[in-house]
Image (tube, rainbow, N blue to C red):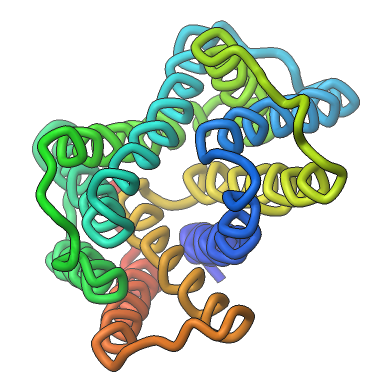
Length: 288
């Protein structure tokens, strides 16, 4: 199995964990605002990752502290912008616009970095966005200018995160990258929004702990590790499996039945991911 293929499987495992965490997050939102949940998630993830990185002596930043701070800014902004977009547009339009990020990454690779991007990759990215739109029923949202701007910011910062992750992964271990990224993200969240966690019950803290570890630390480590092995465009396309996994889990765990159009969307997205896997496993020069 090639290194890039391993990266694709890591990206898919990351998307699965992100998708699984959606059910827990939806349950937490009944007691905690999305903003507070995002803040706690960043702080707890930063603490866990910081301790592990320190124990493994992987805290040396190699002179890339500025880039790591920028990565942390991206993590904080993409989370905030996504929540604003979903709140004002609904899950469908907000998620669909955000997941145009992989298309932006492919455009960056092709026109800025002058890499060769196979035609299959473009088709896969377009299919992934289409599948996400069908899965989330994007057409059901109402047009809101602030929501659209927030969704576009989420798309840009998601693309930037993928590109930065690949570059940092060329010189730093995955744990170092994501530990610093979340440290800066947590710092920004605490400075921007004073913590108000007094009213959280024990059950809420348990769920937030699961979101912060299984739904944040593990998938982010996998995604950064994937970016060290595969190109950011492919990793981004595979990341669009997240809403598909989330919807499937909600179907089985919460009884939220999917409509035929949503099932079609999920199928289209999975076919897009299969296309990326196919071109990755059979091409020896991309992404050169």
